[in-house]
Image (cartoon, rainbow, N blue to C red; front, top):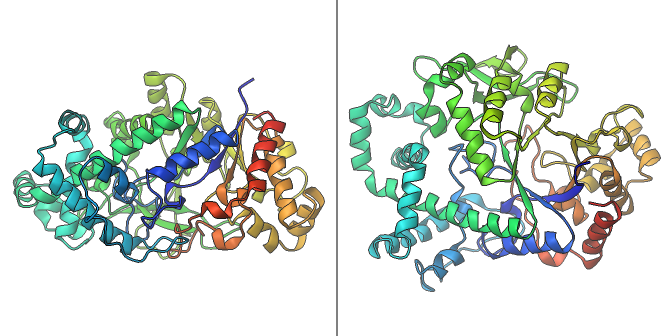
Length: 494
């Protein structure tokens, strides 16, 4: 029998701190210590890539780069690249909600000062590490740094609106822009060096303390990303490089129009010709960053809902076969056991389950989906199987207390019967059901540990604005909540 474990779902941006958003600094280390104190074994986070205009970690400018807002300025200062005068001015930043644009403008200006100092000292104290980083990561970093420099140069316009020479990556034009934007290109390389330098120090600290970190990768990449610009052949695009087909999900019980995501879909035939090199590189890269990786929208590796670009809803799509089995088979040949998690929520076919089970990947069970039918519901803890990760809720759900308080009709009656009610006491009952289940791993969002309501929700799918901004404060985490988490973890042998 595999060792039973439990952990907390909390994105890094939700950590406390005085930089307007959580970072890879002191508070992240404090959170690792909290996990150790309460006997947890897992810290699950959301994607850590550079977010686009709607601040979603699932819509990033790169599948490989790190989010520079997570870089901790105190660490930069301790390394001698900033002084107290550089950090003297700070805009008024809220502690409960992230003001992404304000933080980005302020933080980038400070990081530019650090970059200038870094160049003035000619990388002294960093030289070997920096040179090694540039060499090892050049295969993605060179294109990414040029892409971000060009984004700034063209006032953040999407790359498909750039001049044709750059848009189509004409070699002469690429060389011209590399010379023109050399300073910004170097700046972005420096930022990525700092991000990954800080990330691996945090990861090593967590692992040494017995905490595994579960990362997350979206199935699709953003249309406005270096991944599409640099690899136009592996996506279904028109001659002008705009998407021909886009991703989403068809209409279902929750949405009569389905969900239209707008991400370009993969050309799996071309990927196969390339021996799936981009996908394999992406998986290897993330498995180096994290101890395990959750694949969001896993079912898209078996077949995906492809919608003609320009449609106003997801209704007029079609199912198209993917080649996930070949990708996972190739990865398994490389590394053997696959530390991957299949996000298999929603309407899942037998074919998707076969793909998941063929590689012995754990799926997901979410308690908030358990009370819409009857006692045979697969999300009820008494119906769980071992090779699953059980959650009270995910980043896409309301908090569990918010869900309990908003339940109506048959669902509310079922909750009352199974859990016993719809208040904070029953929230603890809900957590106990998950921790006490046969599922190998049990996870709850930090909001549920802190017994928070809907005001602490992280994301509402289908709504573009107002998401991803929630942060917590240590003073609102009570000793009773800490003790309860430790108690149920020890009680249920996790």
